[in-house]
Amino acid sequence: MKQPTPDPWKREFSQFESHDPQYAPLVVDRMLELGRQRGASDLHLQPGGKGLELKYRIDGVLQPAVVFPTTVAANIIARLKVQAELLTYRTDIAQEGRIRSPAGDVEMRVSTFPTLHGERAVVRLFAGSGKFQRLEDLGLPDDVLRPLGRLLQETSGAILATGPAGCGKTTTVYACMRQLATETHARRSLVSLEDPIEVATPGVAQSQVNPSVGLDLATGLRFLMRQDPEVIMVGEIRDRDTAEAALGASLTGHLLLSTFHAGSAAEAISRLSDMGIEPYLLRSGVLAILSQRLVRRLCECAQESDDPVARLGLPIERVRVPVGCEACSGTGYRGRFLLVEMLTAERTELGRAILSRSDTATLERLAVDAGMVTRWQRAYDAINTGRTSPAEVRRVLGFTEPPLSASQ
Image 1 (cartoon, one colour):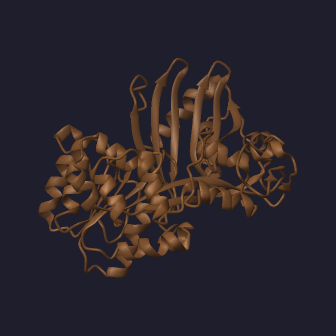
Image 2 (cartoon, rainbow, N blue to C red):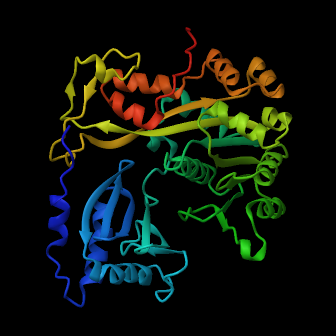
Image 3 (cartoon, rainbow, N blue to C red):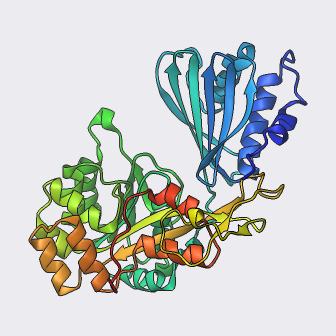
């Protein structure tokens, strides 16, 4: 497979002269614009002995772009901090701020951190409110989209989006809230408590935690309950107090949406149980748990392969491998799509297993027997239809043994 060439990136910045007084502002504006144009989710500025290295995370993978001279590294970081309204004279502490694009369509979160060779900066680029407005925009399979849409009409219960960092959990939850805000025409009270607020959402009363005054997620959620909410979005469940408050709200006439870090839908149940959440809260309070991953889509330049090694031990019938071309910048992939599984606890056997604190493997087996299509099966289908490669599935899902299917 061809490796991405850095030359196109270098050409973008070679037009600027480092001795120009406007070098830092010009470079920062250009790097942010390139990030938006090429669909990057993150921009990394990593200081080192050879200079300040710029990398873009595109389709979930970091791509090296260019290394700026050490002599201008501090100026570039300082300019970024000015735009994010951070303290430029404090280079010894971590800071966080926000930049709004001139067009107002993309919001960026800037995080700086002191390192051995100077300040490191990471910019997270959030998709504008025009993208992923509704659930239909996420590319969910029909057997998940339809049930999830019905569950959003419920008046109580919890819907959790789970997975590792960067898998689109927050995007899914925001799409749910936007859909509710659009469909209810302001006839339902929608509130959120986030850390931090990532995207402004019309029709939702959004609040942000402030630990300095004692307003954490658990405390804020208890106060929100007095605001007459009907639908509550909690940015992320991170600890037992937040989990108890959130799931408790789901049993008292509130629809709750949140995200949670877990490797699978069944593992989310086990992790919450390990945190000390009572089984009855999980059995009665949880409507559905989605576990999702984002995998890269093969570019049109991909080629068929008969090499058994290319299967990487996966039970698949067809293999297409990335090649690389100008359109995909030599990566072999263009864009990403979701692999998602959805567990519902309405089935009797699965519900009993939750109450008896069964392990993750048992819960997943019962969920599959009840009809859940796992993330692995979605991955096999995506490979067999030529949408992605075995290497990409292994990169995202790992090299653990896939779970048993219902037929096994």
